[in-house]
Length: 82
Image 1 (spheres, rainbow, N blue to C red):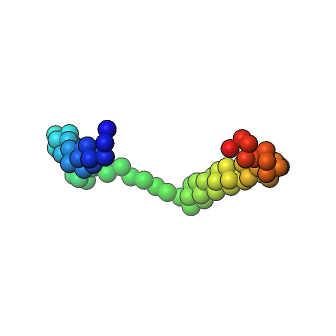
Image 2: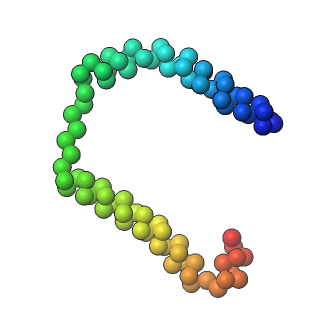
Image 3: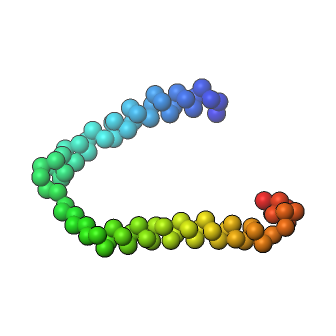
């Protein structure tokens, strides 16, 4: 596939296809979410802190662990398995 066909397909056809699929679903969306039938969400400070702490721990672990493993390798070994 060349670039012209890709650009044509992604920028011309895709939005129209999405609108064709979305239009029949609009009344259902309006009935569920725009008529006052909202789902109540109660957030406590504890749940916010727990989720932020879990996200931070995940990010630190998945950032630190590969860097720690890479620091134990010699530069030649690190480049060999890249």
